[in-house]
Image 1 (tube, rainbow, N blue to C red):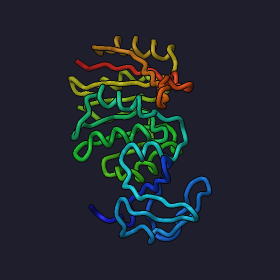
Image 2: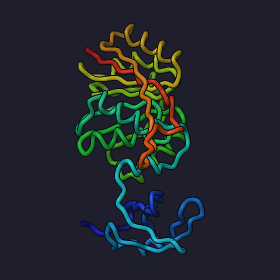
Image 3: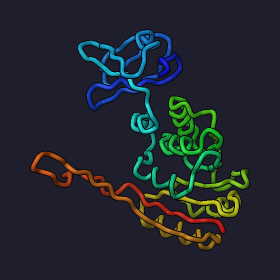
Image 4: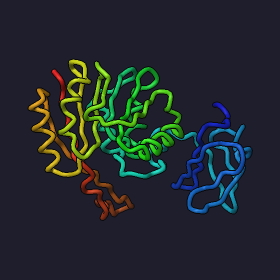
Amino acid sequence: MDNFKFGESVLLMDGRKGYLVKLEEGMMKLEGGRGALSSSNIVGRKEGDRVTIGRKEFILIRPDILDHIEHIDRGPQMIIPKDSAAIILGLGLTSGKRVIEGGAGSGGLTIALLNSVRPDGGVTTYDIRDDHLRKARKNVETAGLSDNWEGLLGDVRSDVKVEEADAVVLDIPDPEQATGSAWEALRPGGRFCAYVPTSNQLERCCLSLRDAGFSNVEAMELIKRGYSVKEGAVRPSTEMLGHTGFLIFARKL
């Protein structure tokens, strides 16, 4: 098991709650005013070691991809894991695949995509807002995935120069305007996905995909309901995330 080094991230676990920090020279502050400590107190230690900050003891964990997404520095609305997991499988992503992404958001989906295509694949993300790209770049770098990512200031509806891509995924307000460019960018057999929050957008996108020549057009919504589990009292949670967005899949044949 490798020791923690400067430049990598570490998850400090306090019971069920975790704090993700990057090991850099000097003092590190935990979110929510939970205290601060020097990186030198962690560098050289191993996973499972414990450190004390103030009156609390934390367990050191090397973060996985889900940790990075859950502790992302949020800005724009992001696609959450229940949807990003379905997107990755629905696009058939594996190491070596090349993905075009429209809309950077906070980089949550970008990180999930990069994790699925590394080490030999790559993701090129287009966004018309530089502040969104900067936020996504920071989060991608924290996740240690920047070597496989290219973030471009541009419009995925018109500026895509890539050909023979394996997949195109869009998180933009008007994906129906980008189905033509997606068709041109994809290789034969390449897959398409769009994420939209409203049924009006879903309808426009599906019709546009069919007009552009795509096959296997499919729309869906994923509902996640948690359960409260106590001895003798197991029931659905009273809180449920009822709607996040619709997923639209298609294929270039």
